[in-house]
Length: 41
Image (tube, rainbow, N blue to C red):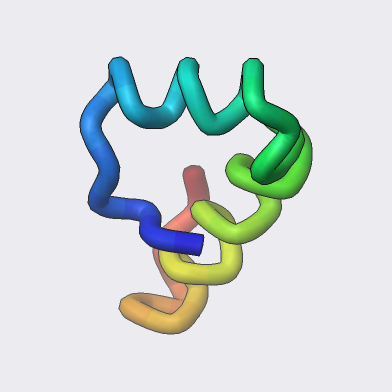
């Protein structure tokens, strides 16, 4: 999953069933932890 997609592509990917909102948010949190484990979102 590419976290750098535009908002429009994000919405279209959700509509197409490419991934769920929950999957996107979970991956976003994983990415934050990879960058800085002490950062809390």
